[in-house]
Image (tube, rainbow, N blue to C red; front, side, top):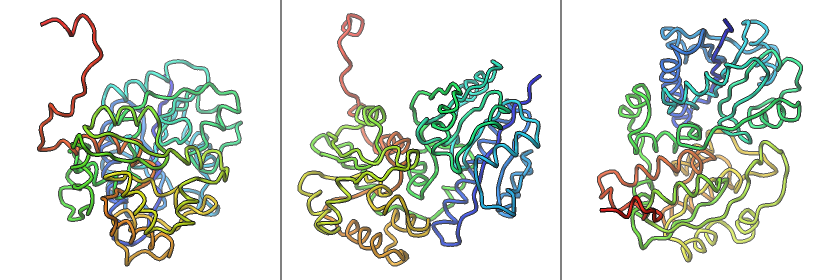
Length: 379
């Protein structure tokens, strides 16, 4: 029997309120994932430099693994170390916060991928990996792997490893990366038992989420999406809401490819300033869903998570970076409601946002007419 091991990587976070909120949410999601995987894998490893925060995972049968304390963290090296030291034949990799919505059937699909012996990789997102299955894991030992998971797909493909993406869905695309992601989980009622208990006990609220949801179920509204939006996900989102949608797709693959092509909206923001930027948005749309990372990043660099997360929740006074503070202040005072977040907001988060917008409202009105067939035309 080949040995199938799941490895969940949990990076420690900072000490601000919003960072602790996101970390606790990731740990709760990891608890749910460990329970879901228990009957399908031979062992679950949690790779973390924060054993104190994750100690409770031991009671679920997980084994905590410390990263190499003598070297800066490098994901590729860490994966190879696990394969060598833990005798792994097939490896399920997860970043903490990913995989929390996987159903039993979806997990069966991941496990079924390991039925064959030849090397192969299955990704939730080939260009921006959150979780993956590496079949014949020892084959990773001879490949130059990247320092983070965004470029894993490209690295394995360049090494002639057959790579496959999973179909896009809320299960495969959703990742807890920001506080907005967690609040979308709560608003939609999704998530495992552990993460739902955590969110029910939290007092953090989102200041603009209710207003954005109201626009999504209004057929007269026009809502813009800005950022790293996949066309397939956008299409699924548009079928689930009542409003019309438009937007600007920019920055896709920016971390996987590491290029620095200038972005149109970034240039407009720089030239006009944040207040004029939101005034212009208000002229053409009724609400905006904004992936702020490509918009506000400078040469691919971002401020610390404390600033990014505070911006997502409009905690203006807690933001140290002056550009992010000015943008967030302008968003808070904009004539239209804006929802701010990262890549997950405009990927898996869109499915949850659509679900949340219909809570307590007329569900039937969300449905769009189906294409004509003889079958659905019959009484």
